[in-house]
Length: 247
Image (cartoon, rainbow, N blue to C red; front, side):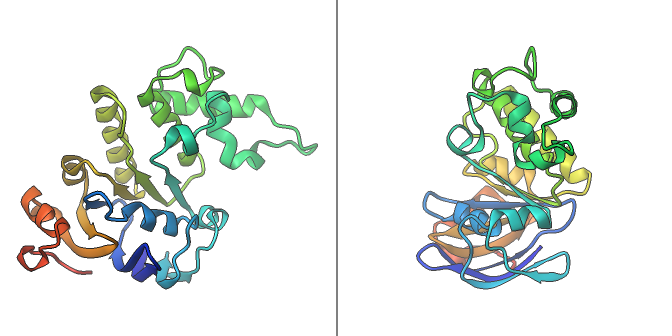
């Protein structure tokens, strides 16, 4: 994906970056930086009003999340309990919900056995700790809920995955496992945008780091230049002291 001059009134302006296959592009910034607003725009939930998005070499206008999914873009929300998962429903149902049409028979009935095989596959692949994929997702730990939400969007077979606060509210072991999953996905060629308020996480996981402040892009740092001091300096608006590389 190539983004040039992306903007939305009262949210963000003039955001430009590239993200390539197999790359993790981190979004860093302080509270109020409006990083999530950019993610929502790229997924069509709160579409951008200005600028250009080029995806796989073609200009696209992403106005709805359905369009983003068809292109191969998925978004993992920061609010897994309120927006990401349906807590009273099973692990299986949550994983297959965005792609339910794939599991319908010719008569329009859900093929439960196919659904279950998908859920079992993700249970093994992402090490979801549960006695059964039929269990209500609300009964899982935070870390395992996060893995179910990742499974849900990976099942959509995206080419670009936007992760918004993927380790918020989970324990240290689960956090390490999620980091391992992200590394594996990038190694398999998936493009990843990682939005996180955890600066050490962004620095450790990202190939490049884009820094925002109050809806403005302050710079992009290559991994070798993305020190905590430089990123924080840019995030606080002292751009003249940051060795930022613009796309």
